[in-house]
Image (tube, one colour):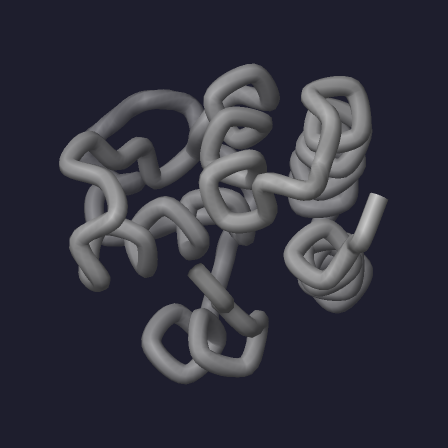
Length: 104
């Protein structure tokens, strides 16, 4: 399945940093969460996490790009999560784009 960051950002343009669990985080998502929400929208997955931990984001990246090794997907997932948590959304989106387009 070919997915682009452009398509994801059209539906989920405003990621936020992870917040402590409370009612205030409902409706919010990180860059990895935007990918999960998009995958649910297109019927690729049924369970979503708006703030997926790296190991779950790794699985989603492998679904989107089967050419990634698990190690590569994990490296991308860790980088996306780290940049997102620091509020570096532009960089997190770039890493996600690289993960989706990587040919291994």
